[in-house]
Length: 473
Image 1: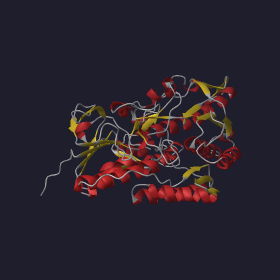
Image 2: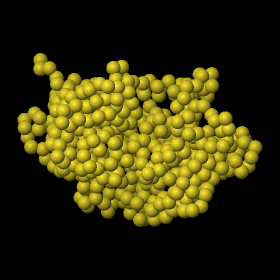
Image 3: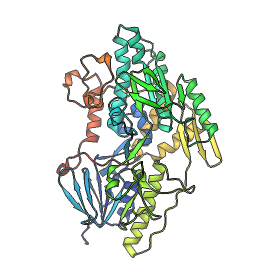
Image 4: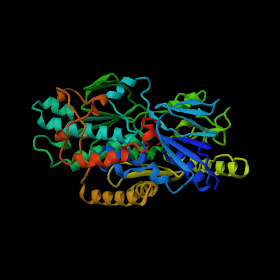
């Protein structure tokens, strides 16, 4: 039996692209090592539903080892890649461990981008990880809890002001979901406040929402959000974000919760391979090979690859998935029999965004859908793309239940939460959320979800316990 050389191909990142490469090489029985700072693959397109209490973390995540366990030539390493040495063809993890490679694939995704204002992160968390989603969910629910116990009408109103910055698909989906949460799900849960009076504001610096869609789709999304009670502000840029207010177009607005959905920045690992663009993406050729580094490839959010219109391909799950399938197939053939690698061609499956209950927009070229039919299409596509039959079944049943009852079962404030001395004065900063807390202080029911999430998020590789490279969206 031939010994497997796991150094043949090393993939950094177990997102959509990285996993597809690993599965293709696994089917070809070619040694591949997948390195990720989390032990799970995350289905980011549905992460906003975790943040708005519609789904639990385990509904949108699957352990990487479970996904790849059928492939004997695929190895999983839990850790963060800190240094890429392309001359020595070695990687150094943050835990000090080193791994050699012959072919390297960078699929480490992207993180939040605050346009030079990183200090805003503590008041305006973005949505890229399960931890982000739980943080946002806790902030939203805590705002209602604080408002319920406050005796100051002005403070109550401030706490129920929720601002979302960024009018792309994530911002639109968050705005619609939070509006429905406050106006339907929480409506009968409080005695002092009216959750339906919460004001959700969606702020977009550009002239319209969903700039990647046709104008009629943008107009439909805006109208649907306004029907849900969302205040839509376009053509206005955010200038400052503080603990209790934001400044937009020169005007200060009190807020209780701010969520960032305006920009992303590619993984900083790309900068170790060569020059990058403003979004941190590394330029690749038609075979997805990094220019000047023939045995190093990049895909997904870290790759700068022109589409049919000459513009860089967007950071979408379908882009990363198609690139992963192509690169895995071509690399397997190249390593197996020396076949030349064919160029990658992107085939858009269309763009979609949900705009609240049974309303969405979908377009592919000249074909456009909106309303209930677009929502059904969105649901079918997203359930199909979920990894694992169990997740597909559970999400389908939960969506059906929510559709009939307006109920949401994951309305839990994180169990490791500690409040400020004066909790009404400001939203919870990010660095204060992830602190130990006595089990006695955990909210009823929270321990069960925390246990489920902890089982999923716990390190799978004892030899490399470090945080690290995220999978792409």
